[in-house]
Image (cartoon, rainbow, N blue to C red; front, side, top):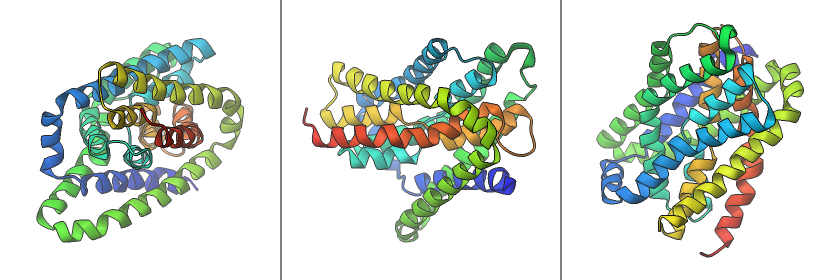
Length: 287
């Protein structure tokens, strides 16, 4: 069971990021410049709003130690490819969603290691594990930046192959994701059961509050209805797979998912239970 978590989890995340990169073209990055206002609002909401909400949730629900640090770890993770699918389901601006997911994921190689270092020290104090920020940055590069870059290279030099491979990669990544999350929970069943009653509602509140806050902020800044829905999705749905993958590196354990990774594992289930109904509501509602 542990080989699924230790080997296939990073592999599945790399495949997910490869599927993102293989769908990217230079036009996606050009679009960021052309629509800088919408992208800027979405990026600021994703980089600032989720961590602020996560910190408030921690205070309200009284979390501490590794669980609190794990919630912040989740909040620092960028949105995943799932947000692109959800943006499409909501009839949002898929191009904006892809741009946000790609660039924030690339930026996270810098932001995540630094912010996680602060969160672990702040919430775990003397019990904080010793870890290297550089090792996290290297891991981030190998499982996010490198696969995205490889995907873009494939798209550039073999567009026909990329068109055929993209949907298959996405399906493979989705299947691997489900298997790995279930395996991660199974290997830590006692901790999962002990913490689900408290973490489940807290993470549900985090996801729902972030989605509606993103929707409102995007509306206040004059974004179109499609852009508002996209910002809501990008802000409210995080890449829990990345949080699970980084947790053992942070905790310094060789196998399994440590306590700091539990929020990401539980969230990976909760986000669908909270996110899909909201996305369907957004899809049927007109501005």
